[in-house]
Length: 468
Ligand code: ADP
Image 1 (cartoon, rainbow, N blue to C red):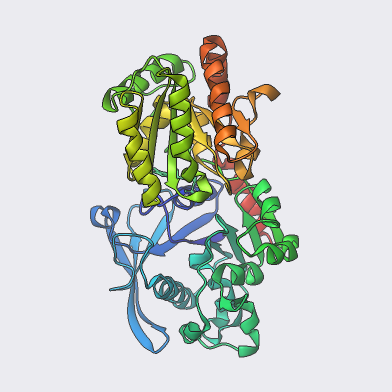
Image 2 (image 1 turned 45 degrees about the vertical axis):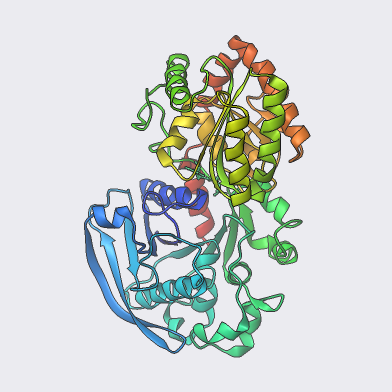
């Protein structure tokens, strides 16, 4: 099968969160199964763009509203990522440093989607499936189905994967003229509650919808930032497929970003060396249990509660624990997390920002990783933690519920029911008790590291789903 993945992110070219990890891995594993999976994404101004070799495969023109613009598509020459990578260059719109966060994001991602379809329409053959990821590519299924300009690919099946239903990309009807002409009777397929809503439109128009974990699919019928009714209505064509992790990138025995690589056999010595290195950089004591958090500092992740959670825990532990945070997001939360450095020097530290290498070092060096998420479509951090022998402390929700079993249920993690300061502090207390039982921790680490969360299984599930 020939599968075209359309996405705003793809690791290592551009990653903001889990979407980048998934799109950087799934196509590789689909190719390993004997298929031809390709990624077509915007050409941002990134290091990857400057450091790699490309060939031009397409030069054309597309139109956004009344504006014609030139499009150039590059292909990465070496196939070193394990899949064909195509980058869509639109001068002035896509060639920026950040992926998102600009006032004209609506125009940017629409121009990208229209350009990609214009290009695919000119191919001599048709792909077997177009797989869209999140709202940035959410108007593709509608445009393929209803825009005259794309009529010759209207029979190609489309699949939408919802990585996060909180973000929907909605914009006003005053921008309708951006969408190439279509039968206006079909306008309802774009609409959700009075706006053009790309995610809602993709849920309506895609041939199949997937979420990144089975539990998240159940949950979004009740909580999906306003799309609950629609998701419940389209449940028949929806399925939850748990994300995998890229075992080539996230492999503690070959991870060049670590102080010391380690395997299941050498986990104790390996974690000790990595913890010592981490603690020396962040002025922490390697003899104490190290609790960590990695992620976007937003409400979905429960980040607003972290300052109080850590204040209480550090205060009550009276110097017996360490905490290290890596994240960025809400400036107020960032400020409060920074402030704790002055309150608990030697026991607490934080790196406010994005740092891929440090994230690997923390997964390797930490004892515990906290994920007190309010919403967690899948969550990859807990799976990376498991692979690196770090015990996850998670709220029972979404993909966390699907991947972490509490030690009280003969499992390997610590689970709590609510995103509340009390619940998380209680869970941290349970973790402290566990930490004192060295034999048990050893057993758990070995067990966790052998759990199989690789993409092999999930990649096949997607292939089965494409046989529409
Ligand atoms: P989401 O996509 O909702 O942010 P996921 O758990 O699916 O959450 O994926 C998060 C990914 O982003 C993981 O690979 C995690 O290690 C990474 N990440 C998040 N914040 C940072 C950061 N500040 N520095 C480095 N990596 C980060």
